[in-house]
Image 1 (tube, one colour):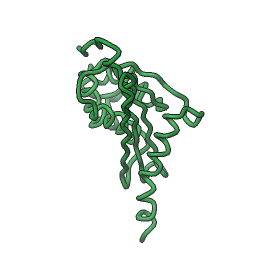
Image 2 (cartoon, one colour):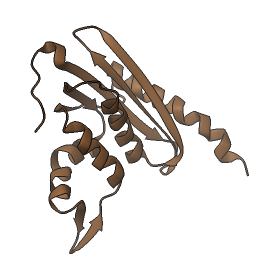
Image 3 (tube, helix red, strand yellow):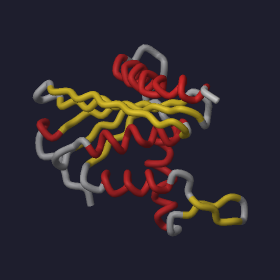
Length: 163
């Protein structure tokens, strides 16, 4: 059971985004972690040579939660429907089914299971509120995360084109 937030000082806002140039292809992730009570803010980003858009969206959320130093009420804001549905709808079912998902009449492995399991572990330490924001719609923090994620994967674009 996640701890309860005691005061406004326990609230943090986590903005995330991830993306790829091609899918799969070079990818980047980014987050902004904000503590409104103190006005402190942390930005981080990173990238991978060969990955998928969904892995980068998830990685951004995981890295944001990993940056937290104590149990908090986390207001997660992301444009990723994949992350949102995974947190709210899919993950409870996957866990109940031994981290498997149904595809037709067959059981299949959960895609990105390593990241989903890590996220499950991390969110158990916090109280989570999920809010979906529209991507590329003028949301300042989402736009900034997108900018950071794109910059993170651009370092790999030249390396990818070499024979």
